[in-house]
Image (cartoon, rainbow, N blue to C red; front, side, top):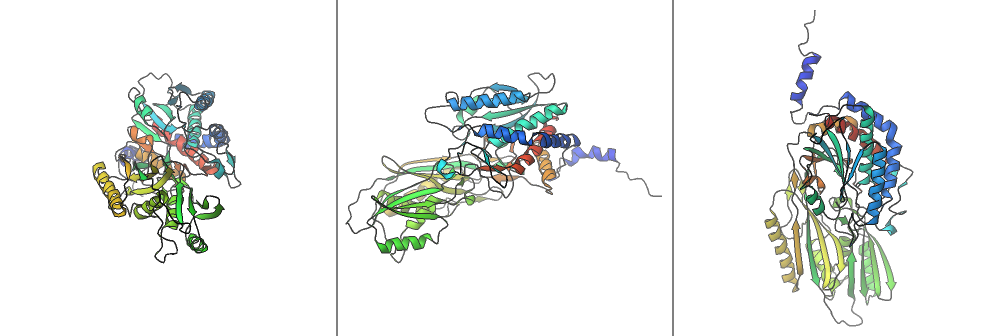
Length: 518
């Protein structure tokens, strides 16, 4: 007769808490979590899409001179969000810049523990000319893409969180923690009001941010920036000398530019032929248009979130590459106009690389977070010349003081070599975030592994930057899948039906697990 197995089910159950402490071991969600997640997906898939359509309909981008407290669009957006949440049986509290939507345990007092779900209701600007329809009208393509500004960043996750909470409420599960969905209204433009709010608000001790990627984000690079002005230069040239008179591109600081343009006066057939031949070797689309002010070149690349420059095609960088002088003289050394100085700066210090390879000794990398990225994102004509904005995402490994010294040295080296003067240099070095001991990491990895059939999922780092940095134990959990392009900040933002359903299952299961913790 076979001896009894000492590892009975009861003994194995007793070992589960110990196993959960082993790095890399993540249990599947509990039967209750799976049951409620299945209920959410079967009952609320279309409802969350309908709610997303409503939320996308509000153009909640930051407007000069207005705040979420004074902008009527934000007032309407918050009203619609609050009405929907109350219809689902959730509690709503409007704090101006912050809306709190919560589901509390039966009879819970003010001292009950919480699970925080961090999202934002504002969006980045959108150029309507680059969209197949209004960016603020959710439309569906034949292959199931739901297209609209905020579909992925961050109105899709808000809609999903609402119905995850509704499913949990319907389930009758006895919660031990309040689930508190926090919707901030200025994540894309101004974090100071949120910092002020957190001075008097007690956040949860475990938080998830629905504003990044799966499986689980435990590291975020620091959002950083270099801004400067290149001098206005006036030159006199002969009528036969080609001269670059204009160069600009980009829409906002945290988007890889999709468009850039330049104007050349006094062109000749040989120059135009050389430019067109070179353009064919570059990944941008170029349009050459003869206009009264000269030959206008429009470059079209591909917009992307500036934290993932590899997902885009930087029209500014490649147009500067197109216009940079060639050794054979086919594209000449331009007379040093303001536009020519701008092209030289971009070609010399940035090029078409992604990691600051030409910016002196500024580039570096971290084993977990990866390399620092650097992208020219906004080039505009200012009063004193050309205003240049470079967006960077820095990993751990160097101090702000060291980075500042290296950046300034590279800029000064370029200006000394060119005999020109850079003005108004401003640098900002955001702080990277790295969390290695969050108590709910293995729970989230287990949820992701179960619903995606992924064995041994591991935490990741991203370019950032999200509001997770401001909350204790805040781990980002979706909505973008590993290896898939994150379309937030792009000029064709979308989320798919299938992804929304998967997100609803995973968010529901995760919130059940976390809200039943002591």
